[in-house]
Amino acid sequence: GGLTPTCPLAGEWRGRMEEGKAHSLGGVFAHLEMLEARAREAAMKQAAAEQRKEQLARLEARVQELRQQRDELRAKVELQEQGQLGKRGAMSDPAQHSAQAVLEWKIRKVKSTLQVFYLTGISGKLTKQGVCFCISTAYEGTYLDSYHLDLLTEPQVRIHHHSIPIFIPLEQIAKKYLQTDIRRFLSVLSDHLNAYVGRRYQADQLQEHFSDQIEGTMQRNSLCNLLVFNYNTSSKSETFPFNARLLYGDLCCSLPTEVIVSSASDAPAALAETAAAHSDLFRRLALHKAFGS
Amino acid sequence: MDETVAEYIRRTVLKIPRDEIKTMLQKWGFLSETQLQTINFHQMKDNISQDVVQCCEDHSASIKQAAVLDIIYNHSYPNKRMWSVYQMNKTEEETDFFDLTDFRKKFKRHLRSALKNVTINFREYENNAIWIRIAWGTPYTKPNQYKTSYVVYHSQTPHAFISPSVLKSNLPLLCQALVVASNYQDIHEMELRSHSLNSLEDMVFKRYSQNFETYCPRPLQESTVAQESAGLRIVQENINEKERIQRVNRDTFGDGPQPKLEFAEYKLETMFTSDPKLEVLDKKEPFRCMVKFHSPHLLESLKSLAPAGMADAPLSPLLTCIPHKARNYFKIREKKGFFPGSFVSP
Image 1 (cartoon, rainbow over the protein chains, first blue to last red):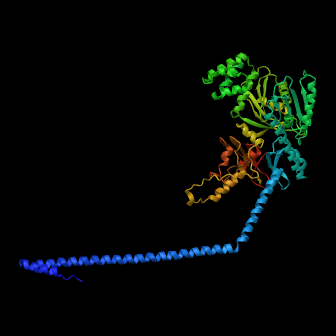
Image 2 (image 1 turned 90 degrees about the horizontal axis):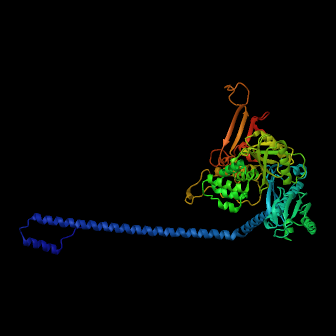
């Protein structure tokens, strides 16, 4: 509603009227219009403010509503989860545990069995076309090289690929045993390989650890079945070094079959006895051990 | 000291890269350490070689000693020569006790009985490899030290690696001497040639990494496809195919480095198959064609073909059989009989 002129205004109006009957009626009406407009503006502003207040209140209420909803849902989810866990824990825990544990134990056992087979020296794996064998060699507790043999089984047993050194008589051994007795074939081949790495190991050890006692270079060959070298019994260079010639006649053996130790022709006779003793030693002991003693 | 010897030493020293000259002279062992100290190895190679010759004059080097320097140079830089592989056979199955002194004696004796004017030098290396250097002459002239053949032989193996000299006529003599000295019966050339001697040895002695199926714990190589940390939302569409290719490649080539070959040659003698109506070739003759693959490292490049997307995996067995068959010259003929197609001749 509009604002009714209050007393002061009336007073003012009267005052104005009193003041100057000179003011025309138009001036008064203009003044009234102005006051009306002012009142209208004020009313509109108030209305807008109230509207805003209402909207704010509505939105706040909505926020509250949503928050409440969210809390409810959260509580529901938590309850569900707990409920599930509870279910799981309650029903299948012991069963699952044991099944899993058994599987893990089985896997560990298989892995260790395979490792044991590998360590025994001959292990194999079935392939699409046959078998692949792995021969791992060792000499006196030290594991040395591994060699592989890929065999085909159809239509006959034959060698497909291999990593056996070329100076090992693989074809000969295969001709003798591969078709008839594969176990024997593998055993013989394994003997050859183990003996070869054993001889090589001895020669390497000698060259590495007793190089001060060896005079000149040591003559060897690929199979390490013939070793010729000159040596002294101590690290000082003596006037009459010995000459040793070790022949390993048996390719499956890592000890020599024939040993000839000689001293120079002008050496004293006593050395001949020592030479004989050394010869015997080399025939019985591993080369680097013989030098160590 | 002979002028020719001096000149030969001078030229050999000039071949060696300047930084290596001192080490090689030390390996040679002909000049003492004190003498080596007197040579300035930072001057021009021409001057270094003159100084070396001067020092050798004091000791009167012979051609045999000069030849040893040549062997040392060729052993350090074997890739400068082209090597062929020869295979020897024997029927007897007795164990061979390879005696080096025996071998050297027999080889020299056999070679000298046919041709007196030869210079023969031997040098043994750690891996049971025997290097033989032969300089050839004629019945009327002294050996030409600049036209040498080299033989690398590993004891108790049926293979020899020969780098022949330009004078090819001496090759049969060389092969014969080798056969006699190593207690074999005959020798023939394999279809395998390369500059890289070590790779030839690896292939023939099966020292390269072949792929064997075993249960032995083999360290699994991490996938070479790099995982980007930001790529959590990037999905490789073809990841299955990529992994398949990697797996097949690994099975074919193995994990380790491949032997180094520079080329592979395929001579085709197959029939030209086309629409019979076209009548391209009236005569039923094989279409002769040669395909040669060249590369600084042929097998590595073949290995990277499939992962790079340039070829389908698995590759043709004609390419992948190279290291297993130890050959890089192939003749492909038409297979006669029920199966049309080609087969590789021995």
